Structure formats: structure tokens, C-alpha cells
Length: 186
Image 1 (cartoon, rainbow, N blue to C red):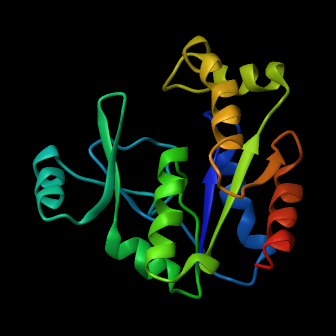
Image 2 (tube, helix red, strand yellow):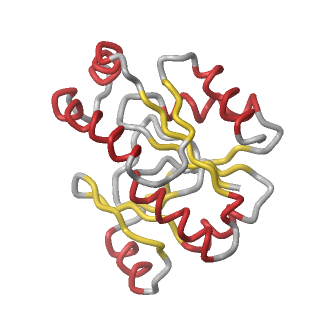
Image 3 (tube, rainbow, N blue to C red):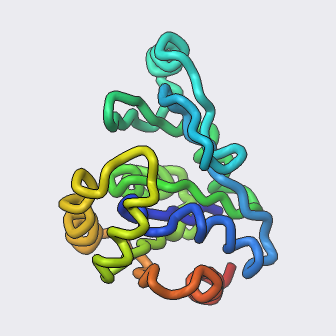
């Protein structure tokens, strides 16, 4: 089973992911994404497979990826095999995805007859002051660069056609995880 997690930067995706296992009987795992980006210190174990551009290109030529996404000069993708395996697993895989990837995952699940095994959460944080504080503590981007994107993410999610469970990330992570587990009967 897959539970996609989408939110703008600084909202609390990693914190949510670390809290969720306490509220479900399923084993919660990240769905490994292949990337050309350098590793960061705040990554969760198994969240990324870091590869060279050469290796990434080879997998791309072999048509192993659902689709490739580029952000800030780096490439990201999930393999078809990993996504299909996750959809048919009893474990709960939680990839952190951008909106276009969520729609792609849902479409893939429909094609292979596993639509009932994918659910989606959108974390939002309406308190701009709190969001700014969280972003200021990040080392990878400046708040000014991210602020315009935050409202845009919300609008895109609302118009995506994906049946998201919308959660306010100003709630404690335990509340968010419990709501998610109850809503999707995880």
C-alpha cells in the first residue's frame, strides 16, 4: 500500500513520516526515490538512492522509471518495479512527492488494477509566521525563495483531481498521524 505525502518545503513532511508508524499496525517504509542529488544530513534511511548522472541515464534508457522530475538541477524518479511492489505490499510505503508525481502514481495504480491501494495526504500550514520560522531554520534554501511557492502548492493540490486528505500542519504531528491512520483505516 502507498500513502503519498505532499507539501511545500518547511511544512513538516519528515516529522509526519517519523510519527506515523506509532499509529498504524503496518510497517511504514519510505518508497526509495532514485536521484542525482547529493545526500543531505536530514534524509530518512531508505528515502533516496543516490546515483551518478551516468547511472541515472542508463536506467532512463532502459525505461525503468515511471517519469523523471527535475528540480534545482537534480533529477528524481521512482522505478516502476518499486512502485508496483509497494502497491501490492502489506507494508505502508510513504513517498514524499511533488503534485505531478502523485497524479502519476495514481494513474499507474489504476493501470495495474491497484487503485484501492494508494491514498494521498496534503500537509498545509496556513500560519505564515510559523512557516517562515521553519524555513529560516533550513540550510538548503532561503525563505524568500520558497514563500511564493507555498500558496501555489495549495492551489495546485486543490485543482489536481487527487482525493487528498488535507491536514493542517500546525496541529501536532501525533494528531496528524492519528487522523491519517483513522481516515484511511491504516
